[in-house]
Length: 231
View 1 (cartoon, helix red, strand yellow):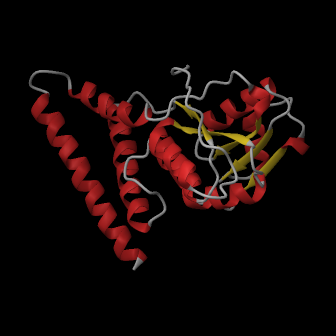
View 2: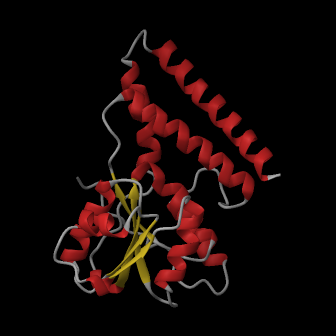
């Protein structure tokens, strides 16, 4: 059953990606095709802006998803800036490499590492185990901006209402952006069909709505105020 769902989601993802390609090709008569790929990927990347850290002490810690050194470097900068935060690395490669990419100045006792996760769903399940979030605690989620909607929704579906700290780490290459966009569209379809997320295109509004209607959620919903994109 799961294999069939995956095949269907991959097919839908490729169809959606093909529509994007066709749109780009047709529209390139009047405008640069690169600008359309950038625009479409930016729609997904800007879905969850960075939360406003006006009260950093309110945050217990941060979860950073493996998959790129930029994510870990950003998490390391936050950890050095806010020394009370606990750091959960989920989906890391070898632990020693993940710690090296975080950078120095972070005591080892502040870091928990999950090296077993191989998917966003596993990230959420294992991060909850390591973070053990309590009622009223707030946690940041650090991952790529294009990956953030699916990640936040997957965590929320598991009862862990994290707050977004996206990293804009997509390469400038139009081809690489297109591949990342195609992959994420396919994954969104796949996760929705499996019931791992509640909507095809998650947003702060949909996550807040779920958090407010869910009884016994371990965390409060995402805060309404957000900062603009930061470099």
